[in-house]
Image (cartoon, rainbow, N blue to C red; front, side):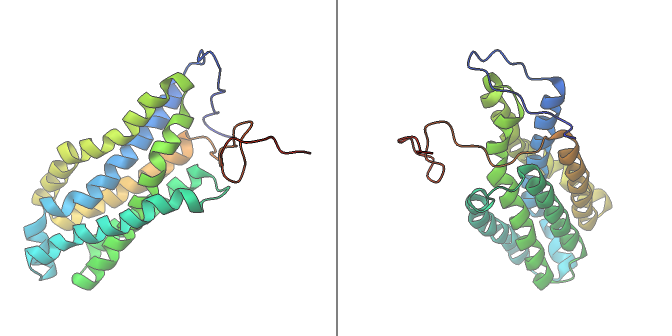
Length: 223
């Protein structure tokens, strides 16, 4: 049974978003927060990270480029490749992938494993980023759709303002590996949160009068 039943669309926009549905939006926003923090955290722990991996700070910093390039490829591809897959399940799997990437970063003993870990993080990040803005409006009443999207993507700004400084604080106090391990644990917690709060989200049905294959308006199909 779905924990958060979908809101029925109303032409008058009179449907209301329930508090539980706003909780789902909040979990999605926290997911984007952890995703972007995972990408940017090396900036805040660059020197100790480079020393621990026995590489130069410039080489360690290149790991951000690796993650960004992978995300650039994955993010636009994911929505096109999902087909009828449940978007909630895909988001949950993406967060598990992110958790694995952060765990590999924490365990890295050299540049080779660091590159692998940042590729894995890029895959998880791209999947979440590619779906977040499309899923958010489906969690709330139609009149709240734009606000839900704003909340979902606000995790990006929050990661820059709070996520990286918080990760840096943890890294300075307990070591950079602990900072990435903490992000791995947070990603796993959010995996459970997504599965608990989001409803099942199959591929949206094409609006009446559209071509199911192209999504363009045209003549109705004959029976």
